[in-house]
Length: 300
Image (cartoon, rainbow, N blue to C red; front, side, top):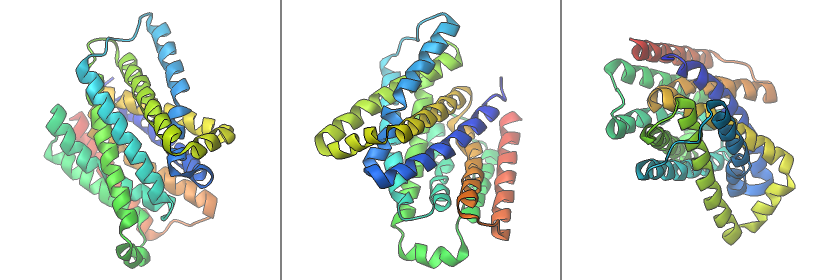
């Protein structure tokens, strides 16, 4: 059980890469806010099905949700909405893999916030592991010949980095909500908070779209097949993220999740027939070293 968070996180990272690509394609047809709400509105039914299934298997109702768990869930829900919108906005002006690199600066903030709010362990070895893996992602995704252009237009970088910070805050908040549930196995607690979080996000975004952007909401139903696919992938990825948060610190999960950049690059190569450069191999090596140190720190 102590190492179960590792395969759980790998499954979540793979599913999230597919979901990000699907949402990115939806941005062109239904806009940023419309594509943002798809993962929540169309993901909620799947999350509720997950919860019903877990309750049937466990032969019990979900645990009682106290005020602290609700507060942390609301915070996680709001930060995740903001992070998703910022991510999709950044992707409109930068490549899929480069935007992923900006966002994957999140483990540093996640580790600090998790330590401050939840008392999650933060050892020197873990800090080094997080920094090395993050440096690897940046080296892997950002081409040297594009650095000048990136520095002259820092808006996508800022959007991506802030999005990563919001994803980190969201992860810590959701882990806190899971920990504040009084009873139940880790699967039941994780699935309960997932369903609650998606319900909150769906209500907030539906209200916003009904008031300010009914066109995007209508368009999301017009492309319901793609929206349903993105919703399922979002709920499926979130299910495994939350299982990871229930098993270990958010910093552990989000640092190991840096392998997502491998999946993003593989997807980019498949779509654009790009070859792997020496710089990318170096970045991959740094990520592998950082992840290896993280696993060593987590299991020692």
